[in-house]
Amino acid sequence: MTRILLIEDEPLIQKSLKRLLEKRGAEVVVESLGREAIELILNQQFDRIICDLMLQDISGFDVIEEAKGRFTIAEISKLFIIITAYSSPHVIEKATQYGCLLISKPFENIDDVLTIFLSQGAANGPT
Amino acid sequence: MEDQSPARIKEIKRFLSFSTEELKSIPQKVKPLRFSKSTFEKKIFHSIKLSKNLITIEEKFLFKEELRKLLLTTSEVRELPKAILNLTSLKTFESIHILVHEKGKPVGQNFYSNQLNFEESKSISIQSFNSLFNLVKKSKNKIFNQSIKLKDDLDVVGNFLAKEIDLKNYSVIYLISRNSFIPPSPEEMDLFQNLSSYLQPLLAKILDKGKTELKKEVIKKSLENFPEKIFVKKNSQILFTNFTNNEPLSKSHLMIFPIEGMDSTVMELSNISRDAISTELYHSQRVSLLGELLNTLQHELSNPLFGLSLTSSILAAESTNDETKEVLQDISLNANRSQTIIKNFSNLYNDQQELKNIQIFKFIEEVITLTKSETKEIQKKIECIGFKQSDLLEIETNSTCLTQIIFNLIINSAQAIKSTNERVNKNSITIRLIKEGNSLTIAVIDDGPGVKQEIHEDIFKPFFTTKYSGTGLGLSICQNLARQLGSKIHFQNNSPSTGTTFSINLPLN
Image (cartoon, rainbow over all chains, first blue to last red; front, side):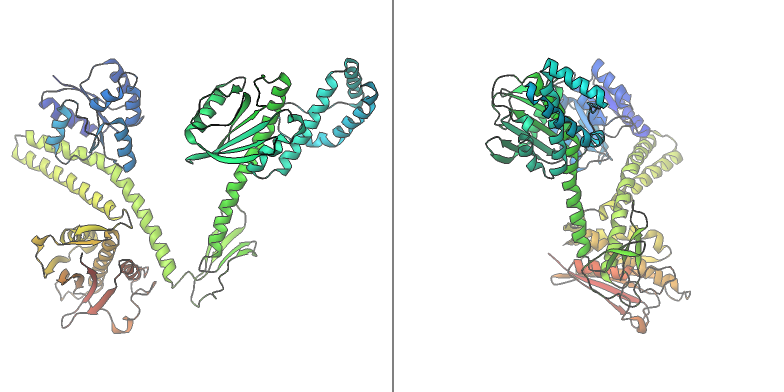
């Protein structure tokens, strides 16, 4: 079973995505605070980490930066998927540096996005 | 040595007498030496007895005196390396580098000078600058040698002393070297440390001076060339006025801004009224403010709206009660619609200069959506002439400009319709898109009361308005924007029916 960590602080998005992913057979751990998420990333095993950029305490990029303590850049690019409502050129450039897939909110087609979330190591760079 | 002592004491006394006051005002870690006459003489005689510390004390005074001169006379960074090397106390050093990086700039500058009067200034990569800066910052004894690896060559031979200075807008590293491998003596270290305490305020002064002066110069230039008369006044006294000799127009307004941080100083701007420049200024300020506001709104609303739409559609799919299902679907639809509206709004106010291909029919539909609250109870329709809606006709233009033109024209029409109480007409606005050969005409047609003959000449003039609360800028802004698109807005009263048609003609690709 795919084990997913979902870092998202908007409660409705968090609940909905958790539910949709669970329906597709994934195990989902949710977290809305960046610092707590870092603890989870460093101490638990996940197959996929979906990370929002604008969190209440720190930014999603800070979370990814901390994950470097455990993973290589190559691993990070496969493990993390960034979701954001704020995809400015600057954000896209930064995501490119990590090699992570970047998906803009709102999702245009939720089914496609769920498929991407559940795929193995989709390191295609930002979309 | 003994026979020179009285002369030396005299010299030092002289130093003391005129420099105590100045010494006090100089920021430094070492407290200025102050003695009463008797203790001073005792100390001097004591040193003479020991006959070795005297030179150090004297040199220290000389050094500080020189440094103080340096502080007062140097006004450019590029003069600084040479000036420091010329200090008699630092004669033993061969070369000095002063590396300056203005924070945020892609390169730093390396100012270099040596005892052979060779001077040089070249750029240094930011990578080299930063690695050296960190290296120097971490070091305790501040002694380095040429073996440090940098991307750029510093041309230093042997050991050198370096220190970093972190200023508000600049980072500075300075290093002095004797071009030899003999480690610096404690005395030299001492001199170097002393130098540091003087260089910090000096650099802060001269580096920021350049910046402030440049800023002043730029502001002065732009004020001088401003096309309207400007006065800067303090207590009604004129401090500055620009080159323009345009006499203030009759009926012109005077705008007065207080200048922040300067008591009773104001800037007066004449000829504010009746002129396209101030219209554009006013308008562009509003647009950029609006753009910022919309951007913030989009980002703040986007997330919760997305959550709303996602959740309600999931719940709708799972609901077994038809009525609940329907309500949830409506919630989801409405959340999506809000999302689209806010997104369209901020897209319209983005990238002001950008030309892009827009699908004209869809574009007009979007603009109509934006006018919804102003055009309640008024029928709106889009007609295509010379092409079909299904042709998906595209036009390359500046969508921000065009949106504002059409938006303003529709609002104007709506206000014209509302201005009359006679409800004889249908209350409708028609946007007619006419493709003729290689051009497209967009006409906004209303069935309001029409434009009275006597004001035909005035309606595009800034500040002309017939409405009680109008600014008189709407149509003049439209005309300015049309000019930016290389076109012009025309209007005519409809005949035989009432109302007005405003139209703009644009080239098709």
